[in-house]
Image 1: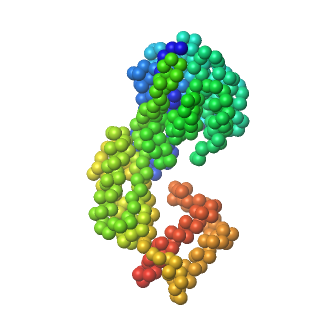
Image 2 (image 1 turned 135 degrees about the vertical axis):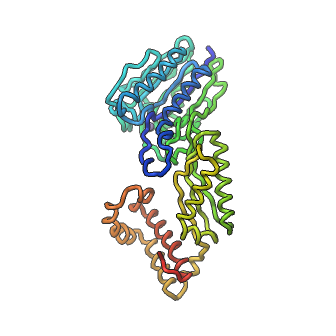
Image 3 (image 1 turned 180 degrees about the vertical axis):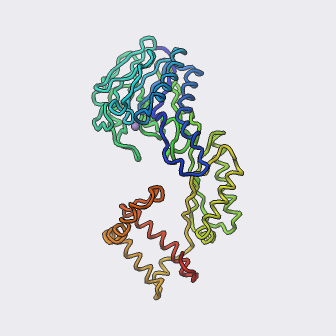
Length: 421
Ligand SMILES: [Mn+2]
C-alpha cells in the first residue's frame, strides 16, 4: 500500500451569522463574522503547504441556506486552490447543509466529490488504494442509523467511513443519524471520519473513530483550540494522527473566585492573571472572554452593590492587557456573601420567617411553577429577549437558582439594615 497523508475536518459552518453581536458596544463583529471563512482558508493553506493527498469534510460545511451566491463562490474558490495543487476533496451534507436545506447550488470543481444523500456510496482512489464510504443528509433531521447500510471494507484498501452523526448522543448536539461505536467498528474500516459534534474527540483508536471538532469556535460554548485532524498513513497503517489549530478567534470562559480575597486589588490581579494566561494560549488570535466572578467572600457586598463600577474596572483592565486582540464579551456576577443560611433560618424573627418561606417554596415544584412562572408570564412577552439570556423560567432548577439569588441579594441587605434596592 502507498504512503499518504490526509486531513479530516468537519463543521466549518461557513458564514455562520453569529447573531446578536450588535447589542454589545465595541464588539469585533466584523472579525468574528469573518472568522469561519478565515479558518477555512487556513485549512486550505494547510492542505497545500503540507501537502496532503486529499481532504475529507464530514458535513455542515455551511451553516444553513446561503444568503446569496457569495458563500458558495467562496467555497468554490478554495476548492479551486486545492485543484491547482492536485488535492482531492470528499464531502457530504450534514443537518445544517442537508440537500433540502440549501436552495441554491453551483457546479463543483472536478476535484470535489459530494457523496449522495439517498444511499451510501463508495469511491476509491486507485493510485493510493483508498476507499471512502459516505452518505449525506437528504433532510435536516435524519433519525435513522445511516451507518447500518454502509458497505463492508474494500479488501486491500485503506477504508475511510465519512459520516455526520451524533453517535450515541452528545450533549448540546441534536441526536441525528445516531449509531453505535460497535456498529461503526463492525464495518472493518481503518478510519471513521465523523462530523457534527463540535468538540474534538477520539472515540476509538486502531481503528480510529474521530470527531475533529469544528474549525472555528462561534460562541462561548465552543471554547478552546479549534481545527482539523491530520492523519499520516504509512504502509496502510496510521503512523501519526494529530490536531492542528486553524481558528482565528478563540472563546474563553474565565471564572474568578473571590473566596479568600479581601482587597479590590487582589480581585483585579486575579482577573488579570486569568486573562493573561488565556491570551498566551490564544497565541495572537482574537480572544473573546466571558468573565464570571463567583464564590463567597467579603468582596461580595461591593461587587453586588457596584456592578457598574466593577464592570468598568474589568473593561479598563482588559483594554490595558490588549487593545486589539481581546474582547470582554460579558461579565457575570455570581458571588455570594458569607452567610450561614441554615442558622439564620432558625431565627425567630422576620428574616428567619422569610428564609423558611423561601425554602418551602424552593422544595415545592408545583407551587414554584404556579406562583413564580405564572406571575412572570405577562412580563415575559414585553421584555427584550437578550435581557432574559440564560434564564429559563420553565425549569424547576432555574427557578430554584433564582430564589437562591434572591436570598443572597436580599438577606445581606436586610441584615445590614439597608433598604433592599
Ligand atoms: Mn451538524
